[in-house]
Length: 307
Image 1 (cartoon, rainbow, N blue to C red):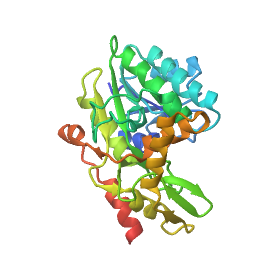
Image 2 (cartoon, rainbow, N blue to C red):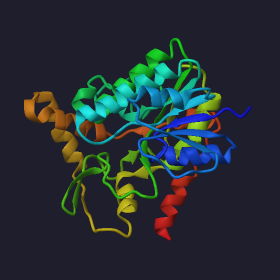
Image 3 (cartoon, rainbow, N blue to C red):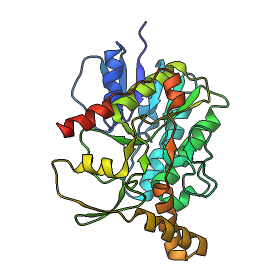
């Protein structure tokens, strides 16, 4: 019997290619969506959100496994918090008898403090002050903490993708810089390498994690192709509006370090966010490669712009 595979966030940036990958693998998909979706062969839609316990229960009923990729990423902080944290709690409670692949993020890691390692891998320590980095990091950190706690008693694995890009991109990721009109002020060195990964490769990585990770294990998904801050900006704006990059990253990091050290009340948290986004690191993809993950969509994404 081909039991369904449940997917939250099925219409999102990662959920959409994940559903496609599951269908190509011959799986039946049961997908949660806040809005009614057109019928599609191989997909059973469940209408509801992550806080709707009945909808989530219907989603995971008799499922073989659950990919939890849902949650509101933007909006008022309390809305993001409820969706990502309470939504994760709802999914974990409903799916106690099946494997849960929890989609987290590299933002939960300590990437700004002097103690953070230069090479970021699955052993990197967690961000000690997620509340200082904004509502998204705070909510993602709390949601992953729930998943790690649940993994003590149930089958949960955690996947942390890096900076996810896709064909519809045009927005400015905070890891690149701060945009003021057509000007983009880098928050780190222009040649600094970012942990970029394409959404289609995240989907294949999630399938790899579901098949090969043991309960409670972690997996980072970062494309081994080195992508600098400047190169990613050029790709995002290719064919679009003109944006002028200002190589202010080194100065911005020095200033941010001074502000954080001085403890200036109103500026300390924004400065801490600059440090977390801008500090240069290398991003290891060794564990994912060892499990058989072979990303290729990012290189094609860059080649499309070059062509």
